[in-house]
Image (cartoon, rainbow, N blue to C red; front, side, top):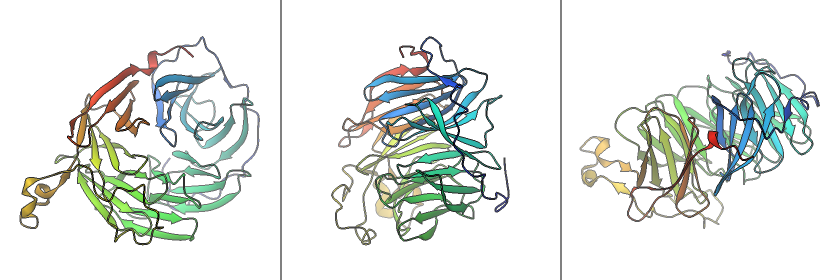
Length: 384
């Protein structure tokens, strides 16, 4: 539901309830069927979550195996599910054509006790939910609410431009939190540092921002625009542009961006059916404001593909001096895929809205096509 900036007042007071306890159950005999309403990884890509018309499922990524499922004993579906690492705490938003609860309500579900331990209600539809051990972030179309996890106390409200896909990223390994969201105009990114209590606005692109990713420590940010040709990597603390890489020359819909755990690589998926891996570098001058321990950053990319015509930079169009991906994996075009990095060295995991699961390996030294290690259709897996 689209709204104007400022028209969302403070949400209803969060309330604890067990009313949903009888709605979600463990039913090992029920077979889930498409469509998929939600698909995402947890914070460290060790598992992924699937929202379906009859509940939700959790799968481990490396190695692939079903973890557990929860079914809804009524008509409706799970339109959004967020998991706190591998804990028993979830945030659920109903979805589908006939949801059993309105889409403006977030239910905080404790799977250990099989009950809803809290609810957050809003005046418009929830677009995204992000979880940390200390905070819950709820994204609406033009506003973001930040809550303390323990008592659901409202800590902050942030206004954004129209955000129908719920773009928002938070740091998970840093304390205090860094939050990145859309700004107040097209192409603008806002960085909220909850330690310094300062906001930083960055003009990331000329066109609308459609995808973003933040490193676990909140130091680096990757963004893509509606053009889908260039990916930009910024120092999230001061807004400095660190690197620009090229996915391709033609327009594309970017579906997901993901940093590797050491921030050495960036994975990109799009509707063109190719997953790209880019090698990242860090401008030490741009990161002068960061703490001294940078051991987890790569000072230079292991392998990068830069056009041989880069010597003519400034003379020929920018395209010819672009930095290209070091590895690729080709998928069917037009389908939506989400990508993350595996826990084995130089591997990625790809999950698709058609139920596909791929695990692939790339060689950062020689580059080229990735090697497919595993493929499974997770919708056909019934061994829960």
